[in-house]
Length: 419
Image 1: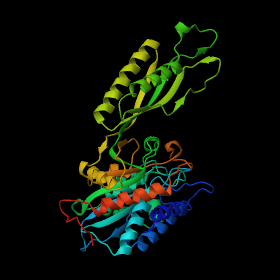
Image 2 (image 1 turned 90 degrees about the horizontal axis):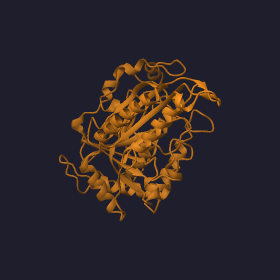
Image 3 (image 1 turned 180 degrees about the horizontal axis):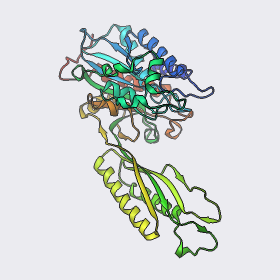
Image 4 (image 1 turned 90 degrees about the vertical axis):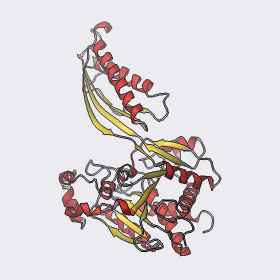
């Protein structure tokens, strides 16, 4: 292919896919809506044009298979999700489907096959917007779909099992979506970084070492409301100031350790007023790290400090854990092969953790996983219309991905020299 053709194709198709939206003037595409089904149809068309056989499973995943040198060969999996958050950007998830389709199309044009099949998966649901349940597509493929979720109801009162039926699928057959681990060689997901590290270091791509585990909490602090002018400072039971002190401690605790981050993402003083000492404060805590030991040590440290602050300020804390996910390490051998593919393009290799969750988290229970991050601009903003990347970076990422596939090594495959 001439220079940058793959990158230009990927960017153009990202624009075209973004036309499938359920909200005029912005990109919003949630699980099994009309816009979602339209996007699935477009992906199906592009996969077929690239020489793949395409199927849909019982949760609406779009799966394109590019056969290997022999029929029914084991498959190397790749892909990402094509659902979005509300008012989304064009590249989160979508890049990881469009890029491998474009690479497969070139191999198909060349008549080139490998000792293994390549399956490109457009996961139907990752974000959790419609049913407040994440990774539905990848969990189904990993054989880990929680069927109790089928009775969850969306904002319109539609049960998930009914939405699946309306879309033309059968929720009673979701178990058949699970892949046979013996027929899978691994999974590699290409994704925008959704952060500023690669951008700040002037690097187009990076290799993910692990998807960080996360601990989240909702905290309610109860003190005693009082008049701002009449309650002396030493007699106050100020819930907001207790929360503020805790928030600053979280920032301090999670600074200075690579990969560890702590966030107070929501903060509310119910019924607050300018002339009132707050009697209640509500906030969230999110602590993440690629090492579970580091994450849990930070959580324990923060919890101990919260108790000390609450006792000193005579504040009652109600702490509820809302989320707990272990970290998912990426396979060393796949990282090494990605590194070799990057070096072949003459650029430095950068390793970094993923603080965000991805479909690879669920697929890790099926097979070993790897992720290739691609630089995004504007400070690394994502989940927002300002999310951006360049055709040049898309082209380079496609070259790295192609090199990775063309030299892919696995004990059960004769990996060299696809024909």
